[in-house]
Length: 302
View (cartoon, helix red, strand yellow):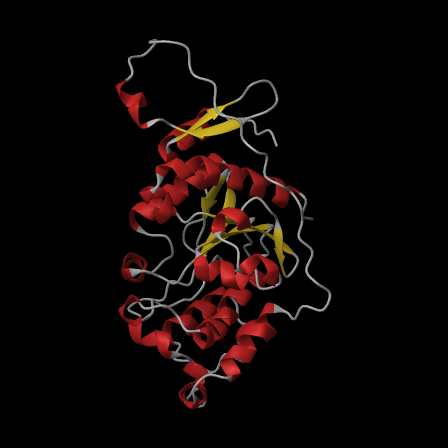
């Protein structure tokens, strides 16, 4: 899928460490060689990029008999310890039954005081992302549960990982948006979210029942933001967003990539987390291919 890249987008890709080659109407992507910084300008012809397999725009259909993700996760929550039931009956801060009626401001306030599961014990700040009332977002980027940086900042994708994600989004004409920070003119709004609104205590993994409880917040964010495409970044985010495609859940990330899945009818593209890209810069070219696939998938949405 060809993309017309302007000077700003090429600069953003360079910031990601991605070298883009555009012969004619096709495009190729390769990670910039580590030694390129030491090569004098004009020292020779630019090497041709290696051949790249085009990502498959094969929309994986949800099985007709598949239960909605909420129901599947709710069944896990039902098997949780009685402590969660006690918390839910303790007061309004623990009652998630009315989340589907909340606007952005009320949703954020509810998440900030929520005690519906054990994740609240690790929370300094809820990281639930919001938009201005009535605003929607073309992109939804969902990451794993908040880490220490995100918990301290009070929003998803903080610190160096957040800067890299911002550059990735700008390269495809999008920018993170929030209630107090609309995207710059000409850029599509991207709502950033975590699969849970609270950092797990001591950075542990979230339990299935906790993911089930917190899924209600993400589903309300989706209902309010009405995204055209969702980027899934991280193991737990992928587990939730690919719940309609159980055949893909057991696959490694490398085999989950390159396919457009569906979550409640919305296209989902799986890609690397910004933290993983910071550790393994050779995967940035693959992440760029995933972004291109997401752009194409989003264009097909009404």
